[in-house]
Length: 143
Image (cartoon, rainbow, N blue to C red):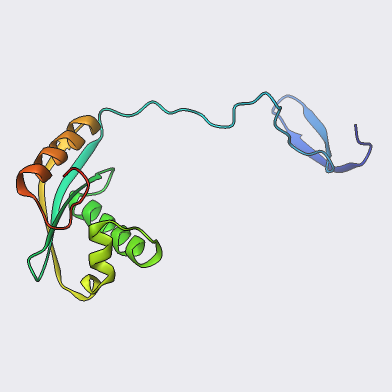
């Protein structure tokens, strides 16, 4: 226990005046038995946006993103921004990122919202089936 008492704080209550001595050298510490990660329960009520991006050359990609609290258009625009950033900064060998790195970033892209689905499992299942049916050139996962 430290004897280096620092600041003398004063708090007023409606019935009494309380003085608290704060030890400046005391540090907050976690116990060694504390779990380092908390497992979150996956949400089943989130909405997901299934979208298609098509380059001016006609190459397409089908993806999904969580809608969150923004509009579906903003959610897709944010996901597109992340795709471009990952293509520039990460060394992924996925078809979309290879295409973007080899000139796709300079092309004009159109974004089309296909549908909005409630529930994570349902959205991923729908995306997988859609990719298998449409066979877009830039999707290489689910084939």
